[in-house]
Length: 111
Length: 116
Image 1: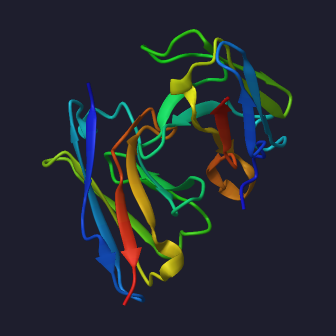
Image 2 (image 1 turned 180 degrees about the horizontal axis):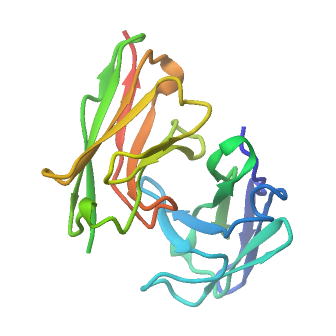
């Protein structure tokens, strides 16, 4: 049972934009930086965003991250068919030494 | 560029111990720059963090798996390992090793099926 809640799915047409929310609590998102991961079908996850809003080298600026209070958001602009994937947020949870926790995951569909 | 590769049996019998090794290339575990993590994903489901190990052998496990998990590191081989005992079919998953507590680089994953 994940402590970070994401919408099961979002969709948009090519070229449009989507926003994926990640809702947590004061013991996780409210206290620690958030990462976002992209998992293309049949592949391992890949880090997209770290420290709330930073992109690793090679990640296009179409992907952006933000955090406010106990929630975080991943934005994707200029949606491409290659963006169709599952997206997960993740962060540390300080309660009862819970460790790292992932969100429930969001499937992005490009219409 | 760092690369990680999981290896180990793809089939484990119920109640036995799952054992996996992650071989790291392109980075040195003993540099001390990163923790080294294990993460799993049951078929069709989301990601679950299992825990991490530091090159010194220091570990931090998920509370939900702590009683059954053991991780170890072999800096001479640039490898780290996972053992999960008393497995059930609920432990069937793709197991990933990753660099960093926040997983900035991942192995390709290996499917472990628990079945008699």
